[in-house]
Image (cartoon, rainbow, N blue to C red):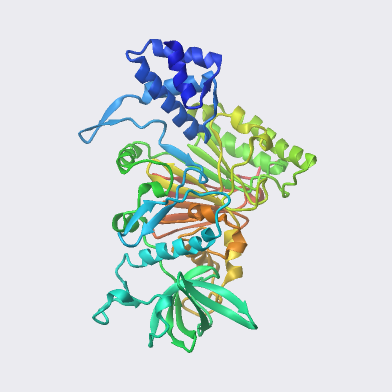
Length: 541
């Protein structure tokens, strides 16, 4: 019988070390229904490894089994919520998603107006059609969002002429042979051929050259983004009189009116499970995240500041999660023996620091690492986690270390958080279609307006990198992992730009500046939606 119990683990690809097997056997002998208990134990072990370590390991140690059994005993009770018997939430309500495997693509079916799981599984080597599908999917996503607030109506639905209070939206493909002023929607991009250099607008069926009569704008518009244009066709060129952007809508509007599945963000939780999490999260409002970027582990000054930060929280209240965003070295990684040695040494230093944080370990604090553009790995988005051998097996020696993808998605109970390490804030102004100007004076914009427009651009485009593909080198089949629809509760973008934060369309957005420069970081309480910019004080000699 004992061998049959252990085979339950083997059937799911889990191998117990001898000491772990003894712990399992001892525990099951005490259960009234050992077979049911072992099935639950196997599933909870996989869940524990996924949520605490970011991946399911094939070889299970005794300490993992002991932690799972302890968690099962603490949270395996049944609690009554609003008159319903609901199983207690396993773990602590925090899920860290690998965007390469746990964020699945969904397609919008225009005929039935519903979101369905895509039949095409993402692959590293997709067909050429996948490149065109990137823009096609973005187009229909934003087109559908435009129609939610009722200001726009498709031209095909205006059979009786103009409708008071409505703006008629004409597809690019329907402009030819359709005289008069029109409002159209599509992708704006640079075009150069046969001596002609300018701009085009494109939808899934037609491309038109543009004559931009607009020379400046109070809204930030970039090459490779989707725009609203008002004008009329003259010959074979669309003469533009007005340039605008499709505005984002608050998350609650998307969820209620567009009925987007909750699994779009990642994972496989149901709406019922999230409803339970929503009740439980009110009992845990104090959970805090600490977010840092550009943590150069090869610089003694940075390591000293990091030590001050960690020890400060060790002596007070450790946070739920630390999110460390790269780059983790002051110079780009070089795949030589010397480069590997130097890179590993930084994580060896960090390993020593983390192992001394007894209060953090007792609390179960997670340490999530998001790779930067100069860290090891292919220069593509999304980026896979840092490998264990280059991080000195940090995840194996320090509890609750998770090597995350870039971008990294975390669900804190019902709150959806995105962490992205990319210098997008520095890149967007290089790709302006027309110069950005102050909305009131027409003068060069103030820094506050520039920052606000940078944030609005990402949310309005529902994408973390609304630029030409060659600028960001996005993997075609994984473009859905960079989308921002519905809007998450918070987005943190690490980079070399200065710290700033704002709230736009009920979404908190923060540019997490370089920790190596000024010791700055952010503290965030997801349930309270409180965002605080912090700084490690300079140490006196």
